[in-house]
Image 1 (cartoon, rainbow, N blue to C red):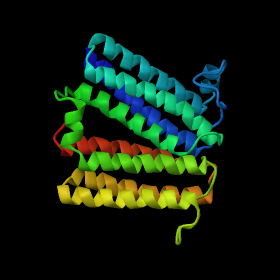
Image 2 (spheres, rainbow, N blue to C red):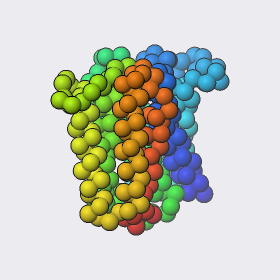
Image 3 (cartoon, helix red, strand yellow):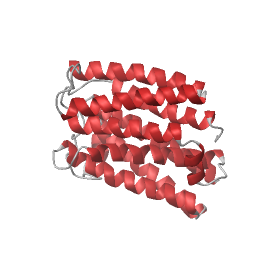
Image 4 (cartoon, one colour):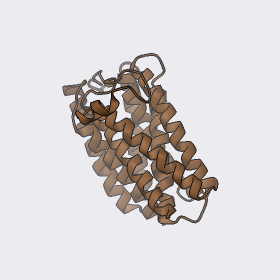
Length: 253
């Protein structure tokens, strides 16, 4: 029974990540202001198709199913999963203040790390992973940890540009935003090299596609920084698929 709730929590966590990309891609970052997690009319706003409202609803549902798994199986892994949901929610609130210019942009990167960790933990619970989470990170320390750094820097880019600023042409980096984007890109390139050395071919294929989509994101952000479109959500989707591929290639699932 717990595996089904874990699957729901993982799917909802992944859906919430992709919805976050839609929120950024279509300029809904502060559509509900900095009020968090709810506003009085949030359900009606969601029915009208506001992705930020839907994003908050799926995040709430993730927390509910995470709590159910903890109640059904009160152990370290489910407890860590529930704590990850809480941290994701709190850092989600922090990202609103990043967008409002009241907190440093690195909080956006931390939020992304927490969100992906939530997705991974409940996916492992669904697949019947028998080890502990420390073992998971030890077994796959090079790719996922470095991918986490790539994800962190991607969130930092989003926070630095506050979902409204163009990155500009990065021929000779100028300003914090371009330097953060450059570090993000360099980390992604090193991650790809690590996959070749480890012979993680499935992950490599997805990572290359994700990199190509990342270049599309760069272009769409510069063309329309306030509403770069679906490329952001697509980039998030391939990040999720890359994480899953790492778990498969390393034999964890």
